[in-house]
Length: 299
Image (cartoon, rainbow, N blue to C red; front, side, top):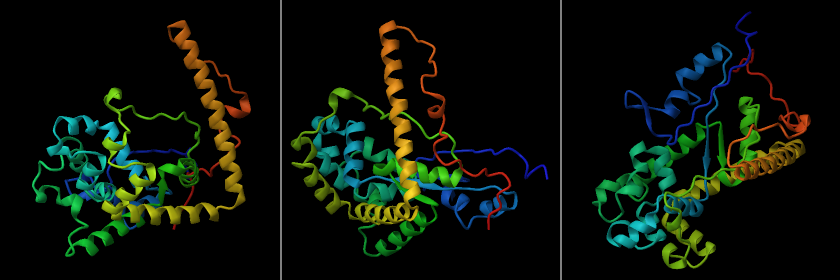
């Protein structure tokens, strides 16, 4: 019928924190769109597919990145009684931040940046320490496990290419080439990586200290990394070949982007960005063409 013959329509939405309420202050993304939700049951009846995905980051990398981007070091130099004396001190105050943000409300993202570790009373940051209380630890861990299991894909920041390719197979993404862009810190001059500012002498030392104080984050990441590795291996050698093609496509794209940027700077005005790549590289034709979602019936 006309519905099954319709062209594929793909909608993507990003929500920074999985526990953030979406409807009436109560319904979360997982409850609304998870595998056992009414929404998914209705979606399958009209040949629609819903895919939930998230990404986890190595805890030490996550904390250092957050600390640098939010310019916590400047606040620590101003008054170390509020935000701690170094990155590790701040991180241990807001330990297990990835797990807390995955389960908690949006406002939890603001507290580590603006409020400070030592300024608040212990009960005020209980959301970050929910895993510390023996009475609630098992329940919190079970909640975290259920939440992660509701996602169709739990990817890794450190393995973004594989995550992207797996997401393409699940959703039918057509354009996978992109240039790497990292958001700059709020004040570039304030980015510090000294041992004194970090509170650890080396990368290995930072990982060890963060793993000790954010043990739930570390356990969550380790388990996700093991599962992700098994999932990638299960794709077989064809997936590895497609991954190589994707990386070659991106390298070609990034090289042309650098040329364009240099030309624009030299000319001191914008230029029309001509298509430099040969036709076979201007699209993702070398990657597996995903099956259209229209007409696909699930379940």
